[in-house]
Image (cartoon, rainbow, N blue to C red; front, side, top):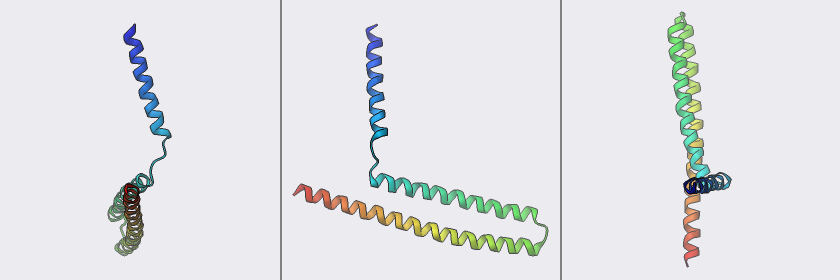
Length: 112
């Protein structure tokens, strides 16, 4: 019987820790890193989707002229899309670096 109380108390403690973890606000660094990771995943998935679309065009469009033109349009879209995502990723990376620098400066100032 005592063992059940101990397990219950331990479970309550773990639940409390989990609730605190959920309720705590993520830091700006964590948010930026999560955003950067999500952007990388999105870029990979979008690229795979576009490649799949090109493969579908190759296998299903009979007209050579339409197939070539379609692939050129998709290629242009992919380049523009990649450029925009790269610029967004660069901005996120800059923000992370700025935040890290700011945090180091703040920590250094507090130590003095």
